[in-house]
Length: 271
Figure 1: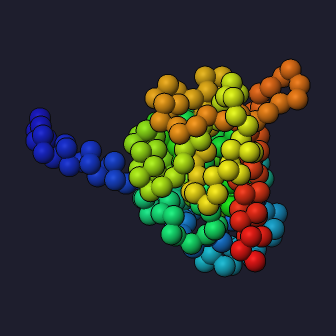
Figure 2: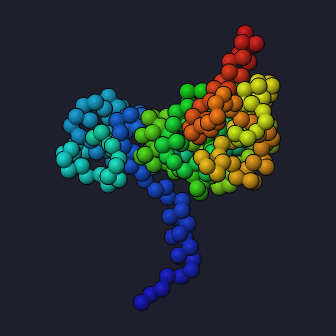
Figure 3: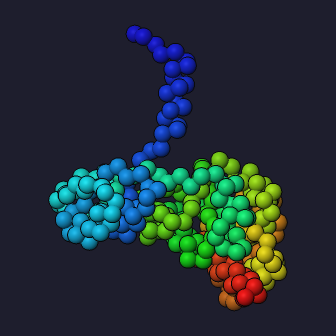
């Protein structure tokens, strides 16, 4: 038996780490928007005849040759609970580039840059909904740690309903390091916490045109101690009733709305 050298093994491991693992996107909205995204590397498209008819324009624009499948014997390897609607696309996860580049305050986009940071939010449905809100309200990017967060999957893409193709979703090695990098870029870091003494609306309005990063923790545990300590200020979403907490995706939408109001006010002043 011939044993591989340590160098050969190490080189093989390094290549595997560099090679993105393909994912299966599913659902008409997610597949359509992925087909229309020139940045998405597309490997294999499987559709039923009915889905092919509905996606005809996107399939033609993508240049991908579809495989027509029998809906009773769909060949894609998906979880039993995945509602694929007769359309699946094998693709490579998107590469949005480094955080420093996409978060640079002088980069194009909204007049006042805003980012969302997710501290161990693992539910793909929540992250998908957050991406939709981030796109609607003009966030520069949604950022999460590489570990203990929702990866780019078909379930996340379906929940995002196409927003994953347009809204940057960056997973970084260390969220704390990312927060420090953002502070060096001039961002104010606001941690969302239901026990904070300051409401998010007035605080955001008082920040003028400073770049803003809103940090949200997972449901239940909330922000981790280290993450909380790196925030410049903790803020809350005021509640009028006794039940004072929101689902993390709903909380993200409210926080983004507060940010959007500040952007709108800034634009009014400059007109």
